[in-house]
Length: 101
Figure 1: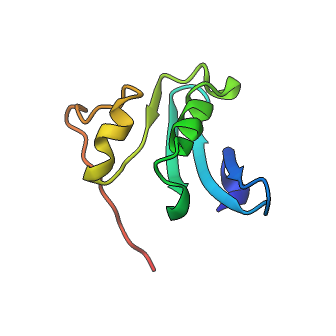
Figure 2: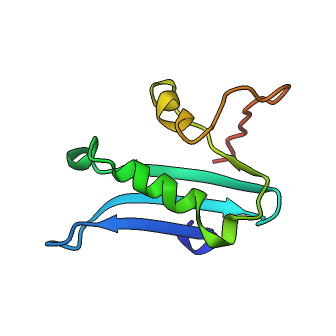
């Protein structure tokens, strides 16, 4: 999964070098940048680390020419992502999944 991800950004704790925050992006670098796995370790949530990760992705030099940043999230995270201009208002688009394994 990581080898085939276009952009990976992590946040490590200074003292232990333990990974405490993570985000990854798949992109064609023209039309779409799909954000996956915005994860902050439970102990560090509410400290602004998610904001740092989203800011790093939305201002990333390699992603400045994409037309759309996209993601999917649980309902309780919608207000968080709205701060970056994400909306649920995508006409005639449905999230679909096919499980193969």
